Each structure stands twice: as C-alpha cells, then as structure tokens.
Length: 212
Length: 329
Image 1 (tube, one colour):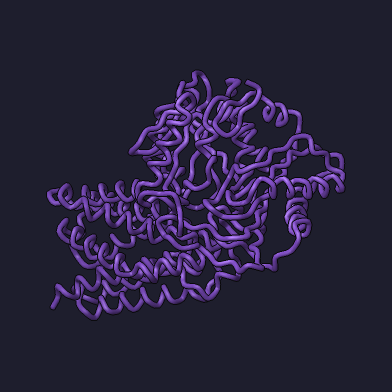
Image 2 (cartoon, rainbow over the protein chains, first blue to last red):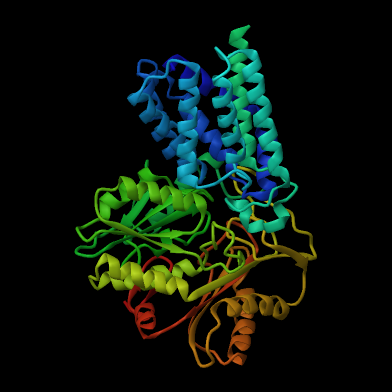
C-alpha cells in the first residue's frame, strides 16, 4: 500500500460522505441522537486537510497520523472506532509491508479487528460491523482466487457492503445508541452501517475509475 | 431553529469562553484541546476528572471546583470528548495520587476514556455511572445510560477525594453511590442540535416520550400526554422497582430539568414525587431541584433517587464551591 493510495482514498471518502449528508443524517435522526453525520464529516475533513503533512510520509506513519487525527477530531463513539482501524493498520504495515492481494486483505482484516476489539460488536447487532465483518471476510476469500483488484472483485465487495448495510434494517440493536430504543429501532438502517457502506463504495469506485 | 448563536462551529468555544470569564475565580479554560481546570490547583489528592458531550450544562463544567471536580473535558455538542483532551486535563491536575475518571455510560464516552486511560502514564481508575433505569434490560450489553445521578456521584466522590483518600477508596465509593442511584426521564419536546438545525425527533402536542435519554435520543415508549401525577407515578414506579428500598430508608431526591422546563413545573414534579415516595415509607432527607443535567433546549425532566447511608450523606453535606453547586463555604 502506498501513501498516494491512502491520500486518494481519503479524498474519495471525504467527498462521498459530503454527498450523502441527507441520508446519513436522516437515519441518525430516526434512531440515533443527531450527531453521527456531523462527527464523520468533521473527521473526514480533518483527515483530508492533512494531505500536505502526509505526502512525504511512509504509509505506516501516514496511517498513524490519520488515526490520531480522527481520534481527536471526531469524538463520540465513531472517533475511537475509526481511529482503531487506522492505528491497527499502521502497526501491521510497520511489521510487514503488504505486497500481494492476500496481504492487503489481511491488512484490511487487521483494521476491522481493531474496530471490533474497541467496540466489541459482532455481526447482527445493528452497527458498522454488519458491513465491515462480511466485507472483510469476502475480501479475504476473493483475494485467494483473484490476482488483482479487478472490477469483478470490487463490484462483489460493493454488493456485500450494500447487503450488510440493508440487513441492519430488520435488526434489534444491542450495541450503540439505538440499543436504548429496543424494538423501535427495527425498520431503520443503522447510520454507522450506512456511512461505512458509503466509504467502502467510495474507495471501490475510485479503484474502478482507475482501472478503466 | 432559533438559537442565540453566531455560527454553529464556534458556539461551543464561545460558550466555554463565556463560562470561564463569568467564573474566573473558580475555573481556568484551555483551548485546543478543550478542557477546564480549577483556577487554583488542588494538592495531594486524587484528581477527579469528568467530561462528556456539551449540551448538558451545568454538567460537568458547572461542577468544577472545591469539593467536586478537578478538571472537565467538554466534547462537542452531544459528542464525547476525545482522549487528547482527557490526557491534557489529567496532566494538568494530577498530583501524585492518580486520576479518577467519572464517565457516563455511553459507548463514545466509555471508548474515549478507555483509550485515554491506556495512554496515560499515571495510575487511573474509572467510575462508570449507569443510573438510568429506562434502559432496563441487562441483555442490552451497553447497559444502562449514565444521566443525572452522575451529579450525585461527582459530589460524593469529590468530597471524599478532598479528604486525601486514595484512588481505590474513591472508586469504591463512586461505584457504591452509582449502585444506589436510579433515574428516569420524560420529554415533552425534542431538542435541536445546533449543527443539525432540526429537532432530533418530533413529538405531537398531545404526546410525551417516556424514558428519554439526555441527548434527545428517543425514549422507550411514546405515550399520550396526561396529568403530572400520572407521569411521576410511572417514573417513580420504575425507580422503586430498580432500587427496591426498604421502608424507612433515607433518600436524596433530585428533580432535574432538561433545560426548557420552568422551575415552577420542576417544583410541581418534586411535590408529586415527594408525596409518592413518602407514601412508600421513604424518608426524603436531602433534595435538589433544578437544571443539572440538561439536554440543550428539551422540555422535560428526570427524577433521581439515591439511597443514602451515613457516609454518602456526610459527603453530600460537605462544603462545595462550584458554579452550579455551592454550600458550606
């Protein structure tokens, strides 16, 4: 993974989040407390604004800086969760630079495991993990049968993210703010799952654009 | 939305600056990262630090000072503060006896304080407050929310820390007060997060939200509006079910406003709750009525009962000098 890729992905995520303001905010108003979109937007903007100081850094140093920055700028529950994704990947890259597609899938899985360690949520609890865990599992599986990040693989990942996000609609929340709602959260998509899906789609679309 | 503000982005900073200027004798403000400390640093005691999203004023900044908190970390509106704020605050007030974090049980607060504690070089412990009985089922692994009962925990632990008690003793008392405290809230209107600009939820003219949290996150049931005695009966019933106090127990009764309910109504609620609790054989030996753990501009209130014992009563009564609570000095 190159620092250039990290910076381009951050930009793609930042603009995708901005263009999904209405749907993410609406979902948070349904079952959250109205701050999720604002926090994610603040974190993305802070990370995107770091470009000048990140450009000449090694990937692990860049990920570490991004992690600490989102930790201090997002706040809320999303701050430590998103930060753990970057901080754990930074540690992993330092130990072993990813080369193959399988290495990259393993790296993503490490980031996801970092979030899971911090938030302790499993699949089925109506959180961002309902998108991240299946996507990570599929990525690992596809990396063993694909030679590169081709359109087939990227579209499969996008579909999996979408499926995971939609699946939160019928779930009873047992983690996060929506847990206090009990059965009333059923019928509403989890806003954290939605913003994760938006971010994954943004990075996949960026890579699809590059492939063409 | 109609609010006194210049821009949503600068609202918190301007408010903190106003608070610090108005109470310059009590507190000192640091910006970026945002935290407040006592104007005169305390020595030779456990540093008691709290914090959470802004919008709950006077919690926690108003409880900073002698007999209560040593430092507070205000997050953005309804958003947990971040670990860098907690670390900077801890470094500013720690004086060799360790740091006690008092944290309301909300996922964001818990995770951020947890990361701060992991990064901190001095000894630390955490009291997690979880007095809100509205989230009643323990199968919800996030557990109960920490709400207005936090004020009682902060007062009692703050007093103990002032005596020079060690970290473990302070944590143990904090946990005990939390176990003996139960709250439940009700909302008549939603609040409006300034940056969002729209009410977090809609409540009809004839509706109320029972068991609401302090962020305007909807409660557990939406019900028809009805007389105050009926509403209070439901709140008190849930609290008594949780605490199961023996007849003759001494209690502290806190009626807390969410900011947009006048004191006249809060005292009416107190009157109603007090009569009901007394009819259950409870002795109300301490009380507090007012806006202590608010939810921006939400109309509504919560009722909190703390089961007293001699030690808790002694530390509740001890001198305190903060912007929001002051007695004995």
